[in-house]
Length: 221
Image (tube, rainbow, N blue to C red; front, side, top):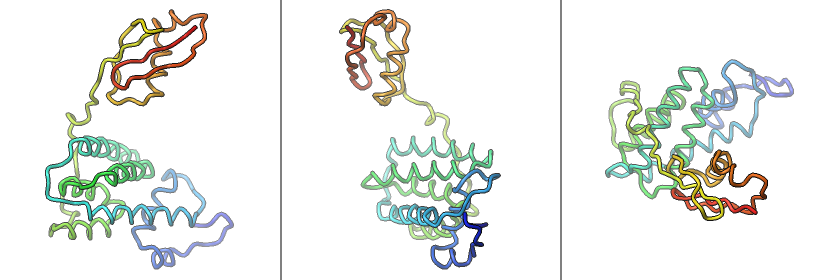
């Protein structure tokens, strides 16, 4: 392990400053497992900040019914992390865990069951903090002996909605799209649609009006 200038990095110094979990997480996150990557002190600090963000989530944990939206998202994370681990893509697996933490941080409260599942996912990458958090929320059994999470296929299904495609206010086609799809993606799908293209051929698109989950209207002259 070396810095970009060739200086040898003493892992014990990093552990003393940031903790063993930070070092482990950073090494797995900095790049493809099979490729060498320059050492970055800012990257180490970034890994530490992520773990601190995870630590703060315990303050939101309540004995309550799991939030459906967050639970569905968690199962997508479980599926993605499992796939990444199988492919030794540890950096992208950790990236998915970071995405979940960002979403969980937006919630006022988090169900204990949801947080427990997340800690099981985090455990292979940051075992010390995940075990401590597991105890902090009232569990005595070590995560080492807990069953690893499995994604529920039903929760992986993305809800679809029908989007009406119009040109200058007149309906020209209908398409299926993911519920709450991004505005930019809906615009892209509309402009790529063959029937829409037929009615805007030779014209200049002035603007595109998007009504989420319902309509995309292309205004062309």
